[in-house]
Image (cartoon, rainbow, N blue to C red):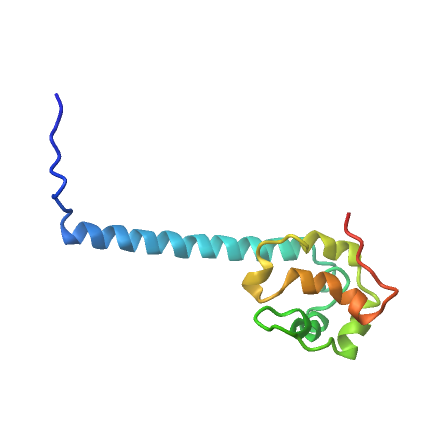
Length: 128
């Protein structure tokens, strides 16, 4: 038996509100999962002592202005930033090259991959 549906029939307002709240909840949940995955991935690549790819968190923060999103022309990396890259495991950083979470942290992956060359023409991160 077919049931006729009136195309002009609207859902009651309380159902629209519930659906909207459910959508917001799913979005928030998705953001939490994405953030947790990014943190878990960074921790998985972390060396002993709380560093990532041989660079401490404070050394990474020295480099952040030079790789930040949202600026047409970022500032040049500081001497401290470039100094920290001299002992970094650049191949390890290649694992972050296509990471979809970097923009969530305000990091431009292209600028980050160019940073070793910007600091020292002899340093390159060859990610094959």
